[in-house]
Length: 141
Image (cartoon, rainbow, N blue to C red):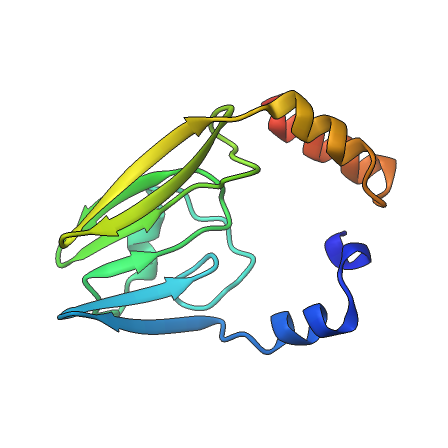
């Protein structure tokens, strides 16, 4: 899908990124994963299903994505955060993101011009099927 928009350097960079990454900031441990904290990059995990993915994971903050649905959920020692999506949120017509500041994570949403985004999308070198699918997501259909 997006491969048509990437050059060889972009593809090489993405293929060589770690599937799971741990980062230390001050005295906090962050586990960063695209989808599942266990490393499955394509798994769709709802807020209710994420608890099943925490076996042996020790991190104050577990950051996941892939669902494009913003949430935070505390499970025992872990705070699981999905910041949502800046450009393709599946749970409302706003850009959503998370901020870590002063030992706290806060979730934010801001309005943006969805119609302009759709207009620009329709000009992209993607198949009509993909463009229409993305348009429907943006319009929450």
